[in-house]
Image (tube, rainbow, N blue to C red; front, side, top):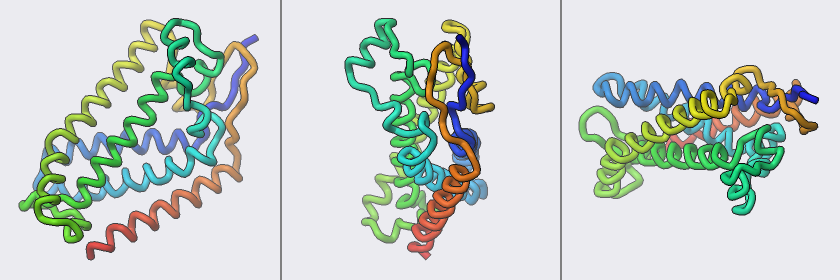
Length: 221
């Protein structure tokens, strides 16, 4: 019998859409350059804040947002690819989605890190540039402006393509649950906790992440 459960808690949904907005803004401001680099750096700091928050939330957040709920054994991944999914695969992140969840933050963290130590010698110098050798800063800048940005754009395109594939080919709407938080499944499944207490914890973790990023940025002051 179909059952509706809370799969994505509010903090997870807020993180997801805030990251979407920030990444889109980063791509746009990075392409525009010039005075737009002020906002580029601000959005970069925002992404770092969001990533630090998600790292913590992946340990203590709602059940389906925890890393432990979508770390799959190789056998489980193979069964999914062969069309024999585990019931949990249709609730939270399936094995393919899980790979994206781990890869995208890793790439974004690399991009933000190179931005922190970069120096384009025109309009932007990262706050941590003074702590690295000039050659390191220039290498980080080259990666950030070339391979790094295109890797992110490629992953975003792949992510959107996967969403469209599941929507049109498998008739599975992945966007809806990330908007409402709820998903209808055909079997009993655990709901993610999403109440005032858990949301308060998320707010505290976000505040800590904000403080950490402010500290990092001020190191270069």
